[in-house]
Image (tube, rainbow over all chains, first blue to last red; front, side, top):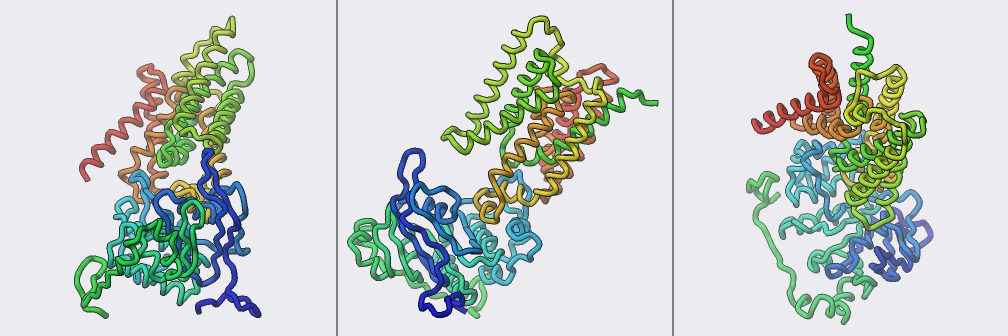
Length: 256
Length: 262
């Protein structure tokens, strides 16, 4: 299923989204300078950068939600985008269940129950949106983004509010999306661990592209060490093995 | 047998409640109560212009409200100013200009009270025509764009990716609210229009579990408050606008008690 959108005759997977030397200015300040980003079908691209590096701004520009002052963003014709914004607050004054929230994006379509079950959030469907915890909100936003069968999923800090087990689960979930649906994923995070694991390509951003390439390549560049300090590569990844797992309600159950 | 002016008043009150109900929920959800205030002050400028120039009052009010609505939308998109600051400037600016226009209009000795607090029992058939065309237009637009509006109320960026024309929808919403404001001035008066937009939805909230339920509750409370307020106004010779608004406040009190109990 992966790379199902490869153009016949060409060796490369199809380009879904391409930004060429885009700059974004807001209130007289240059937030992004001459940034190039390309996302191919079935690819996981991650953007990492310190606070204030313009990561969210870059995503919004790539999605076409804010204008660029230089350069151009091109989408493949008919590209369907799924977007998980960094923050979404639904006031308790708006009565809305999770099921309804998901249906807003694709009226008339049933919610993606199977995927929800995989992410352990199918029990949330009847809950009011304003009562969700941070981690639950993240999962629900992801489900809404998936409800329109996107070609490209754009995630802004998807790991925030997740514990280590949750991060691991999200990684597995994203991998499954890519393998089974040929989905491309573009995500932003300041969590080095989350970004490095499972990415095909990493873009290191600090208002401009500092460096980009495979995770191992990027990790070896002096620019990366300058931004994230010497200690990051030595930190290692915490491996965590469970002999049990949890139901969505928190009960312990045997590993399947 | 009910007198004819009473029938007209009732029709006007119910019509305004029908139109303000669905718009009011968006005003509450999108935290735009300030926008209602700005419109009502702008409406006073319209009244002043109408009095001084002799133009049709409704046209003057609707025109001024539309101009303010468009200005505010434009400011939102093209300036760093916060929306409530922009609205504050427009509402106070329009009010000041309105007062000056009135003071310039020599010989104009019309009682402003009716426009400030409403004089629903003096509603004529032409006013009713305005109000009920407003009801039809609001009903049609809200029905047609309902999903888009709810979508962009939750998150404008997400709605934009669902191909909702966010800026156009925002303008349509503001224009409709401006029209309803112009139509409502006869019923509740310029000073109390925001109450009609904000109180019924807020009172309906504890009883609603869906966005549609909240609209239904909001319309219901408005439609009951208007005739009750009018009857009180008729029997005890009270100004009609404040009577209707107080009735809505009563419903709000009840809902407050219900909310506490839950």
